[in-house]
Image (cartoon, rainbow, N blue to C red):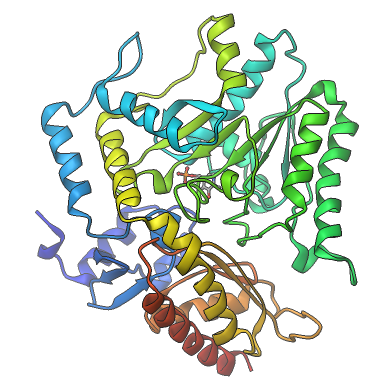
Length: 457
Ligand code: PLP
């Protein structure tokens, strides 16, 4: 039986009766009712009421190749027919994870040649945390196990992911975080820079917070630093250009491993395969998921640098870790085809050379003067619009985070799906967007801002 046998009201009633949603206030959801999305094509999603909505979030930062890709459907069904499942435990593998690993090694930064699979970004960050600690233990330094992270980081929703992340509200519901994880300030100049402090100086100061934390813990006790090249769920916080080179220098100086979380920034979003390449960062691990399959299958890949992989192989001993679906053959078949599509259609070059810069220019030209807009930041096809009550003083609407929710609701009603994070509106559209799609988005966001301004006045 398919959903067509049900009316919208029936689907909502069943959902209310039985479905607990992620990151949701269920009392609020029961009152508001669920939006039921039923189909999608190209850059658009469609709900049961027939609304066509431009999906400026690519689902949840993941549908990089856009919706309606028959080739991905075919890759999945062909693989399911041939071999729907086999594991990669016990000295076994299947062809697709093997070939995908080779492909990922080819497109990753030069020092990365090994891959460990999971089904989600959260799982892969668990793997990354266990792996860096295991690495130091194999090197005879088990006490070197503290990991430095940042406020507002999002590294997933498992206990390890939440512990690594820097979201206060999530920590408050942890009732016992994974030990030996410390958090420092994030490079968010719009709110954290001192008056008159240049972006460059602020970037160095934010990096120094990492160095201070290493020194406070004792470098001999610090395993790694973890960071998203651009904090995504924390509000598309794009660090000043001075930040990452300084982080790299600090990690090298204190022999601290550098872990990147590219679950959002990976697979073309910043105009290279990985933000590590856009920003010239040389990480020891890169956590990836989402755009790896464009969301058509759940799959994550932890890309592991030679330093860690060589120790794992040379020292030997079992790494007691893995998932039933590590290297799932169907998910890996879809990932291979997805990467082929991204390459064949030149989507990454397009983001770097055309649509990425065009998005930044068009948002600034179309919305920069709007009274509600405090700042517009973009990198590739990632964008943030800071919402303020007063442009000159950067005063926010109260309570914190309330205004973007009003804007988001108007945005959806105006035909564009955006997300609100605290006082920031964010976008992460499919890489198939063209200049025309960008223009459509700017026009719809402008309309939503005007409508919201009337409500907020
Ligand atoms: N890391 C980052 C940077 C993310 O943005 C996310 C999800 O949004 C995750 C990890 C967790 O991924 P998942 O939801 O697939 O577990």
